[in-house]
Length: 95
Image (cartoon, rainbow, N blue to C red; front, side, top):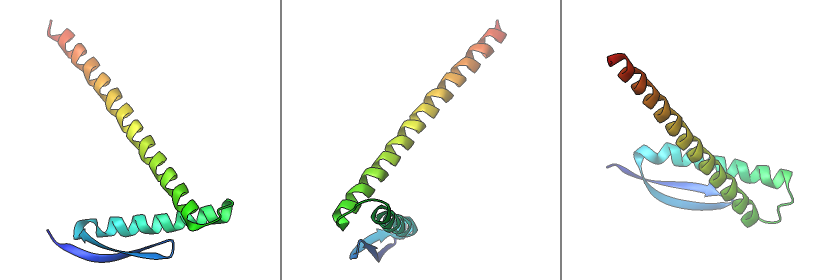
């Protein structure tokens, strides 16, 4: 596995990371997304320091991840129910 050393800047601090090259682009994109969210929170809310903005980013990203997980679970459940109905219909045709 090819590992690269990259630096991500978040809230004015740099974080050196050793990452698999396949994940480099994703980590850079997420770092930029966090920076953008920090700026958005600072511009739109009474954010007193970077720590507050980072905490708000963590809450927003965690909420988004949980909503996506629940949506995926619901899609799996719906798909499973559809497949079961199709199977029942096919079994009815066999008789």
